[in-house]
Amino acid sequence: MDILSAGWRMAYIKQGEVKGCIFCTRPGEGRDSKNFMVLKADHAFVMMNRYPYTTGHLMVAPYRHVGSIEALTDQEAFEVIRLVGRCEAAIRKAMRPDGFNVGANLGKCAGAGCPGHFHVHVVPRWNGDTNFMPVLSETKVLPETLTATYRKIMTAMRSLAEPKPRKAK
Image (tube, rainbow, N blue to C red):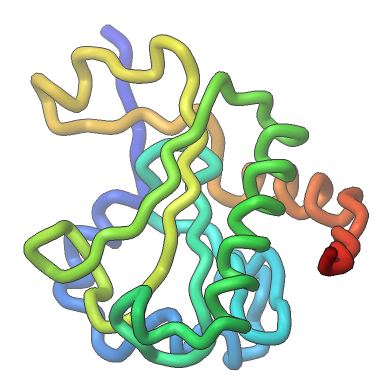
């Protein structure tokens, strides 16, 4: 018999409802590697999802606590999208997925875990990454630790050249 281990899952189950907003507190804690912070820009940042849907699941959020796309400033909106693109490039380089799901859940009924702070999920996908485990046993199997994935993504992110702004025509 094979035994699956998802040791992080119990911590998630026992934590109950998270107090405060992780998108407001974690960027300023000064514990970037412990919090899986990937990149900090002027108006937004990237962090790994501690309880990922798949390996390499990243989240992009503005620093400012806003709950919707319409509440973003132009600078925040631009930077969030720019960072989503950098996440795609870094994950592609580090993990070679076959595709991506990119999206935001607006409101608790839509699945937002932190409904008051807008964020975008960047989820790498591989052909055949969906199997019977989530359907029959409500279990996800992640093939590597969060720390190993974090190292891969950080290495890839550091190797990417900063995109140059385009001149208006």
